[in-house]
Length: 110
Image (cartoon, rainbow, N blue to C red; front, side):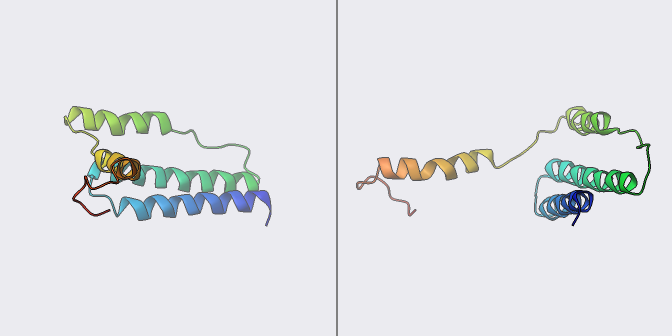
């Protein structure tokens, strides 16, 4: 496999990754961002393919404007980017706390 074919496949793999994970999110804003990233991966694939096929010009990118639009839309609607950050922090910190408190102090199961 040549480097351009490899790059094109990586972009398609990234697109699939973003699409699959967007469908798993409950937060619509986060899902929108992942779908946007999936679309960008498709564009990257198409750019590499055009280059491979001899095109010397690439279409202009609206990446910066589009990303700003996603976050501006959220701001305009007074929405927050909801993540499970507190749950994630607790999940990753729990083994540390569990070991520190490993005597008979916790009632919950690990």
